[in-house]
Length: 246
Ligand SMILES: Nc1ncnc2c1ncn2[C@@H]1O[C@H](COP(=O)(O)OP(=O)(O)OP(=O)(O)O)[C@@H](O)[C@H]1O
Image 1 (cartoon, rainbow, N blue to C red):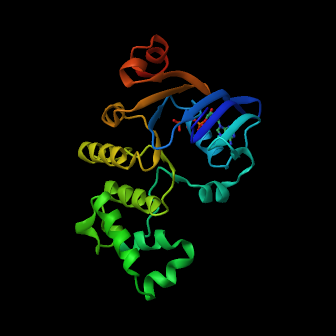
Image 2: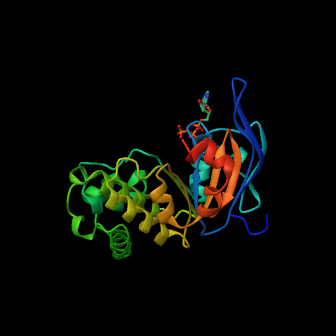
């Protein structure tokens, strides 16, 4: 599709004869915020695995910016192209401070020594401040990441992914295990970062999806069951039957 950032068409993937993804089509535009919902086993994780090059589809097209064939890319290449992925479990370095974690993310994995023993350039310091403000951890900049709440660790990790300035951020169930206040704050954060980055969020928490206020894609049995506003998909009889009405 013209102007798409991510384009999936007719994508299928089977595991030992079981179709986890079945003729899936999906388009994400630059800067778009999109929620993906669906029952357990609907194929949400497999879809993200395909986009990031972790899993190769059996059939179908997966295009980045209309031209780059993502079915030939591995996870390192998709990261380099600008696709960031936030897994459910936070993976911050607990023995470093919040600011040091962000600094490390700016410098990449080879920057551990420079982070611990080197000096921050003025540009790095400015970028760290921008990210701290964005993820609302300014007050916690010098605290150890290990002392943060679960929600704060999730925000820090989102900040670390943003340090790489991805054009697409895939986020897997960020609200799981968060308090209600943290959940709402996370929705606000993702709304804020959309625009500069496209964000695709997989989530089960419907209050969170409502707070995102974005287009929703409902997956079921590896394909798109419904797509549109939350009000639109919530009124769909099949969606109610397989997911919302449980
Ligand atoms: N490597 C694999 N080998 C065999 N089956 C797999 C593999 N990966 C996924 N599946 C199967 O494919 C289906 C889709 O799984 P997937 O994890 O993508 O769903 P999901 O929508 O992310 O579910 P959940 O909400 O539970 O995380 C499931 O039935 C799962 O058991």
